[in-house]
Length: 60
Image 1 (cartoon, rainbow, N blue to C red):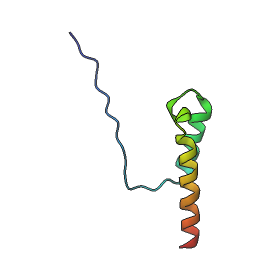
Image 2 (cartoon, helix red, strand yellow):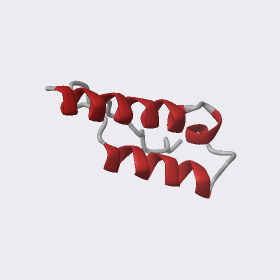
Image 3 (spheres, helix red, strand yellow):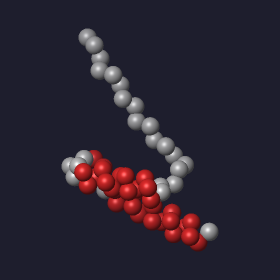
C-alpha cells in the first residue's frame, strides 16, 4: 500500500509577533471563519501579541 506523504508542521520559536504577521493571520481567519486559525482564537492572540510587542518597543 502507498502511504500518503507526511506533512510536518514547523514551529518557529523565539521570534516576536509583529504587526505585519498578525495582520496576515487576521486576514486568513476573516477569509475562512471555519478554519482552525479562526475558531481557535489564534487571530485574537496574534493581534494581542503584536500590540503588546509594539507597546514594549515604544517604551524601550
